[in-house]
Image: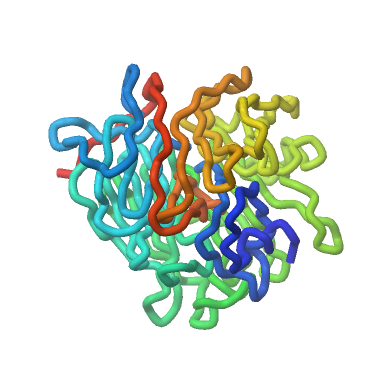
Length: 399
């Protein structure tokens, strides 16, 4: 399929920072994702925070841990994992299993472990809630999607006779499974012959089954077919009724992303949008896939983000409607910097600088670009900086 999606799914563990190439997700034969030095992301997705003033982001050996028993776990703060360690503004938490990818919701975070388990964490002990296919060092496709400002997450469980799309409510623990339009041949195959969960937005889930790419209303059961099985549509992200659809020319060449509303109307075409990877929670902004920039969805106006660093950078997660987390390259190929940036002014403050010489590092990302995972075996933090963040959402701890 397209070159950008092929690159993301390449088996090579690229040691240098590279902005995301979405094209790899459709690649026949290149559908496996290994650990990468790729800091990319999406809407996810959406990152995370407490009403914190001057709270230091701690790295290192994790000697300090936050006790969440009496304190609601907040998900609107900058966070990431390094191996099995979850890093938060006021401490670290051992999640018990090395993390491959994670998403946040308003009721807690959900992550995929290297043991192929799906876990939820809302402030107390992590709870295993499901299983996905894949191995310790690879995933066939992004295994986990979520809604940062809702409570739903989704994944594909192919442990049975045929794959099932699983939708789990982190707030209530309720689970629904959908396998009416899959079959045994969609287990571990290649697009379009594989069950693929692309995104979830409120009560709308986007996935690929035998009908093609569909948008399913999880409350009413109504289904919209976005692209048939022979020409599936790749939904990069979805927020507030808008979705990002990858656009190609007739020869399969990359064009960019169209912003599409729930009625199937293109509200901002790829010529104006460029290549976007993630939408803000209110759908007002899109973050670029290839450089640190945001696009006003209403007008198409582009606003560059001044990171203060010379290296490549890309927005990967929204804290709220106008606060974007950005990951950037610094002078050392084994370092990246996480920044918190305001939109549209583009002003950024450093959150932390990470060394990529050790454990797998994962950043929150809620949809198709959920494969935000990179690093080696024993990474460490070279520095931390103080941040002041206002919260936009909260979550209660597990009972």
